[in-house]
Length: 254
Ligand SMILES: [Zn+2]
Image (cartoon, rainbow, N blue to C red; front, side, top):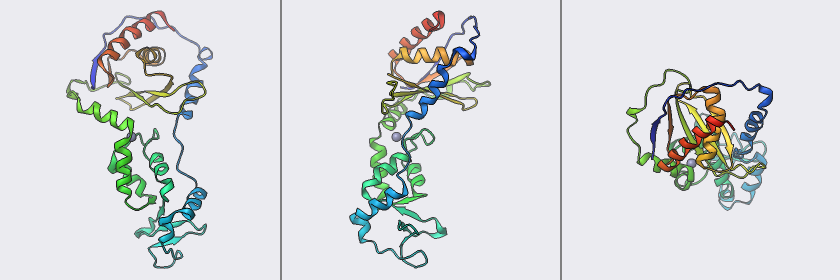
């Protein structure tokens, strides 16, 4: 369920905290890298797996200048020939999941839908019935499912104000679980400013309202102010607990 929440304006005292005392901010931003997904397989990996793949062995690649539908590049990697030289690397069955994952889950593509994930992958890769494998992957993708469920209960967004300043309207989102980092973080808490589209991301150990409230109070409110609207698709009980904890953290500090 997605719903927007108007937060009452608070009277509060801003305390300056010298940068030297908030070294953890650096540590946190470094950790964001640790939860990001791996990139696509290397060319060596593609080459090796093509050599073992039963479908690839049925192709009859020519050389680059031939008219064959498939061709070997200088390293022996098989490509499907396309017009305008937009040739696609032929992906062995063993690497299909890796290629889809690398083009669907990283933060910078952020779980695009089936069509756009397909388009993105088609820029570089090809395999038989690729559309179907991408469809299956995205349909089973957990963050995509949760986002879809959230959308089905979408309240009209008309009641969300147009922001006129940074962090006036902020979305809060939790993604994961990812592989646990050495500091036992498994989720990523992100805040997106609707005005500037500026994103802040924090690795967190759990999805509790308390954890989110602690980060929101110590990181967002302290640097960007309370704003007026926070949008989240977390449930009603999360939000009420979040509000209580947020006030607690705000009043007593960390
Ligand atoms: Zn997804």
